[in-house]
Image (cartoon, rainbow, N blue to C red; front, side, top):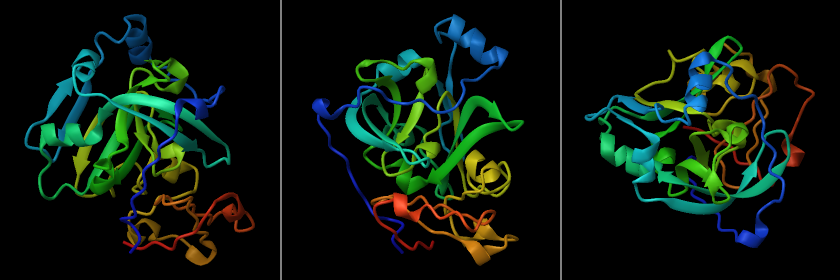
Length: 246
């Protein structure tokens, strides 16, 4: 219920925010530094998992595909927003190329970044991956992505909070279940920062749910779960609230 709400943002160039904050720290691995030094010529995006046609794409391959340009508002879970223009490949096109198997329910995006001793990742529903404004962006405001904003490629999901939009993309995996990925909560932030994106109530198993706090902004399906600090309630910072279930 409510998990299939659809929204689409349409801003103009005059709405673009002069300063767009960049959260997080770029990867510090030798792998990323070598790719950056070589201007990402050797970088490849791997699509694999429950698909008929796994493949790897270079940045040039992505540039050769049909480009989607969208001007959208980015909403951070910390409370700030910014509007930017993003250009890249619709995720729906990537899905059509690799042909996911029928049992593939979720799409997992892996980063070149490591944090808390683990590879950064986030998982989303297949349906959300097909949303018209879910894209793999290689441009911001008409220019190639810079490192702080996720070069060479980042995810944009315009119905979600910013932490779901993985930067410094390395690979995409199509899976039937996310339980054995990371700590099994659907993403690195969910695993380590104590907020959970609802992929079904199974995500909360073995948790004390006496202090759950549900909130979402506009038509997003993101849910903030505060089971560690029950006195913290961020609901006033959001526009609307929707109770969600799978």
